Each structure stands twice: as C-alpha cells, then as structure tokens.
Image (cartoon, rainbow, N blue to C red; front, side, top):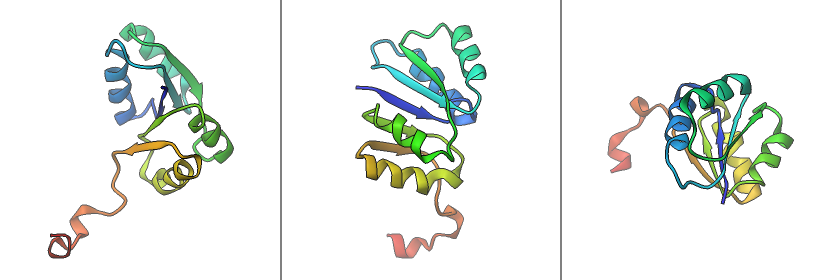
Length: 116
C-alpha cells in the first residue's frame, strides 16, 4: 500500500506529514507539493522514520494528479478548498480512496434543521 499526501507543504499538510513521518511501520508515502524543497528540508530536520518520496506537484495538472493517484491506495487531499471537487472527481475516476479535511459548504450557512 502507498499513501499519497497532496499539499504536503501547506499548513495542514505540514502537520499531517510530520505525523506520518514519525509513525514507524507505515507504508511508503508520496509527499506531493509545489515546493518540494521545503518538504524535503522539513523531513531531514524531523528525521523521518518512514519511506517518503517527495515530488514536485501542480494541482492544476490533471494528468500528473492521475499519475500520482494511480500509484497510491489512499490519497490525503490537503490542498486549498478550490481543488476539493476536481480532486474528488479524479479520485473517483481512478478508483482510489480519498480523505479530505476541507469544507465544500460553509458550515455556518447549513440549515441545521434539514440535516437532523
């Protein structure tokens, strides 16, 4: 199994990558970000306990996204929220599991009576 972390250099991505890098026994991880040098520097500082491949990544390049997703069994999407729907659609097309921590709808605007 391989874990793909999209947005590994962002605020959420940095925290997730730290946890993944410090958890012995995890499967290989692909840390994708538009700033791979920043991600690589952090990993060296943290002394990662897992196999982590850092790759340069452009979230607007759907072919690249699909190519990375095809290498993974689970994708952790921590990209800005504007990428949530396109990334989810690509994950469905590829047939890969996807986790996303973003909000597609502003929670403050949800009619709570209709949800319950």
